[in-house]
Amino acid sequence: MAEQAGNLTFGIIKPDAVRAGKTGAILQRITDAGFKLRALKLIHMTKPEAEGFYAVHRERPFFPDLTAFMSSAPCVVMALEKENAVKSWRDLMGATDPAKADEGTLRKEFATSIGENAVHGSDSEENAAAELAYFFSRLEFV
Ligand code: ATP
Ligand code: MG
Image (cartoon, rainbow, N blue to C red; front, top):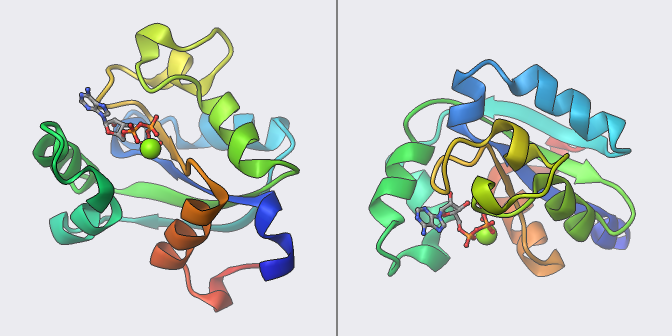
């Protein structure tokens, strides 16, 4: 995996989108955009697991709501492969706040608010590697 690190990123289809029945539509958009799925599973995070994942945000005022939301229902975690994967995936997701997201982005189409915004994507190669390792073991990558 190490030699391909720059081509891999980590994504989540968040609980709002899974709950709304948008998992299939979002996966279709992801593969249509040229990403290859290298790992994929449905999980339901505990509150402590969500707090561990979003630990960088623990001092932010929205941290309790964010971690309650992320542990409220199942989500889909993914390893996505494409050239320039981190930026390509964030471009497809769009801005954090759906009101500011460009036309054609996933958050424009599927997010309902800044807190419940349908998808997550790593913001650097370093964080992608750490987030992939948080959710997946070696054996789960194809
Ligand atoms: P993500 O990390 O989920 O891909 P992001 O990198 O666009 O999103 P971050 O600044 O890392 O945005 O915020 C992480 C998540 O915290 C956001 O996706 C959103 O769900 C939530 N969040 C961020 N800012 C706010 C806010 N002002 N109010 C409520 N929730 C927020
Ligand atoms: Mg982020």
